[in-house]
Amino acid sequence: MFNNQRYITKGVSNRIPFWLIIYIWNMVESLCRDYKEEADYLQIFKVSTENNVLTISHSQEQPAIENLVKLSYYGTPINEKIYVIDSEEYSTMLLAEEY
Image 1 (spheres, helix red, strand yellow):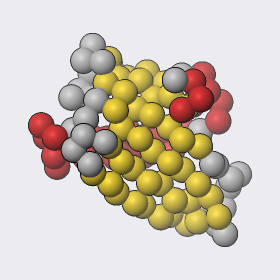
Image 2 (cartoon, helix red, strand yellow):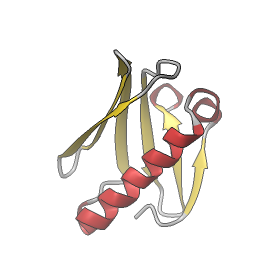
Image 3 (cartoon, one colour):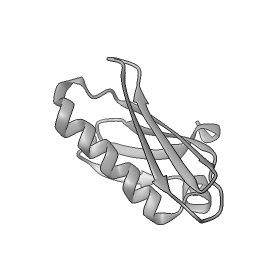
């Protein structure tokens, strides 16, 4: 799963820094490597910024898996919900509002 062509939507391209897009793809790869058959087609990322800390909450529904990452961050605040969806032919990263 998620081992196919990758796409990002215009919303992601415009509002998410490139380094964070790559970081999120790497988190998806890590989950697929660690959980293999348990990886769900829908990965959910909640990104928030507060007091120079960027928090990334990564989860999936079936089976329930959660991961939380906190990074020092001094850029423009980011507060977005991002989905990464695998359709077997390709994977797409999109903002929740674009779904």
